[in-house]
Image (cartoon, rainbow, N blue to C red; front, side, top):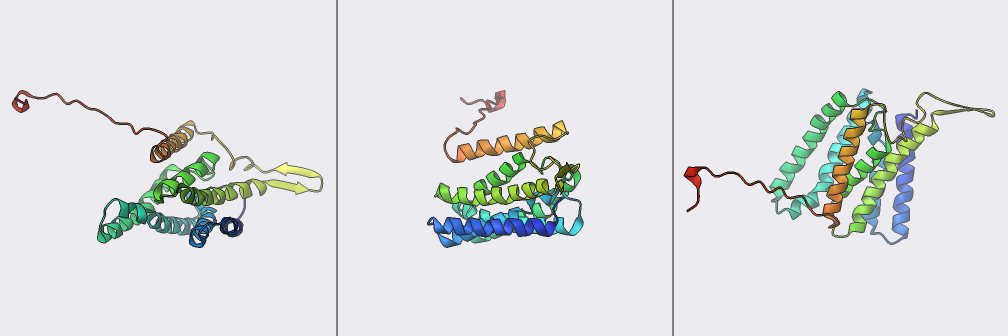
Length: 228
């Protein structure tokens, strides 16, 4: 398994290359840089399920800071006042920093379904939905940065699970536990795909490919409230 610093270095190099490529192909510089930064940061995301103290706290701290920043434009478009945007951003920060981190600690295991390909797609779709941009390509670039960074972590873990000694190649016990589609836990696998499916549906609705589900509930009227 690669060390925390190696994951950061690898995803940061990829992020710099991703920013440069976007810039080269005509993307607005600040948008290209932001996509690269998200790529670098996302190289840490799979370790959110780790029990190793300080790195995990740092990852949740960074994630809790970036998510509200991505939400600012969407909150403004909802008609919120500047004060409302600030309060909502603070609430999101606290919810992620303490609430989500507690849930991860209680309900995830290291190298579980959060270390998987469905989790990588989930992280990318969250970035796509949180950021508001009339230009869909701009949102795809940010989501692509998150996806590349997340996958870089999984790929590096798989590379470090291979022991090569001369012509003899051996696999560690952790081999295959990162770039996976399923885990040994059926409930964890089902929850992961339920979250991914829900987010995919929301992306489809957001882009107009799918229709939102409307629940029509007809409540029975009592005699005292019947219309005349």
